[in-house]
Length: 210
Image 1 (cartoon, rainbow, N blue to C red):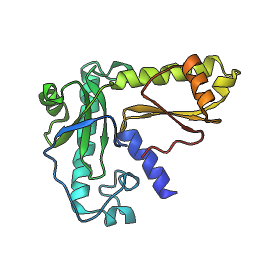
Image 2: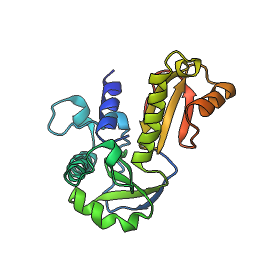
Image 3: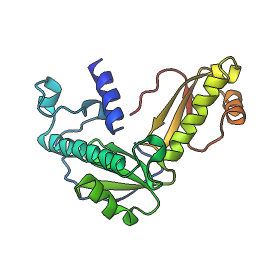
Image 4: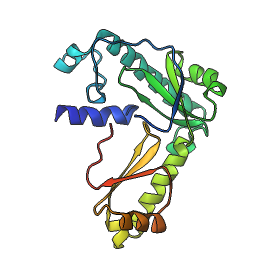
C-alpha cells in the first residue's frame, strides 16, 4: 500500500518510460549501487521514514535537485502565461523524474533549439532532454475529447465501456482502459470517440502508471 500511494504521488508532481522518444543529452550524475524503481521515488528529503534511509545518497541528491527543477519550471510557465495544461509551450512534451532521480524534459522538435530556454527556466543544467513528436497540450486535447465524450454520452454503450483514461507523460501517450477489450470495442472507440496513434488500449480498471 505504501508503494501504491508513493507511485501516485510521484507521477502527480513530475514523474512517471520508454516511449517514442530519443535521448539527446545529459550532464546529470548517475549511480550504480542500487536499482530504485519509481515506486520508491517520492519526495523523501528530510523525512524520517525507512524508505528514505534505504535510498542511495546519489539518488537522493539527484531527486532533490529534480524536484527543485520541476518547481522552477512550473513557476516559470506560470509567470510567462503558460500556467495551465492547455497553455503549455508548443515545444513542451512533458517532464518526469527517472529511476536515477534525474529530471527529464520531453521536447517536441529539436531539443537543442530549446536547451538554453529550459535551463534558464529550471535554473540549472543537470537535465536530460528527450525528443517526442507530440506536445503536452496535444495530449491534453486528446484527454479532453475522451472526457467530453464520456460526459455527454454517459448512457452510450461505447462510453460505458470506458473505465479509465490517463495521460502518461513518460510514454507520450494516453492510456485507455476498456471494460471489454477486443478488436471490435477498440474500433468502436476509434469511430465514436477519437482515433489517435497516441492512445494505448488495455484491459479496463485502475491504470498504474510506471
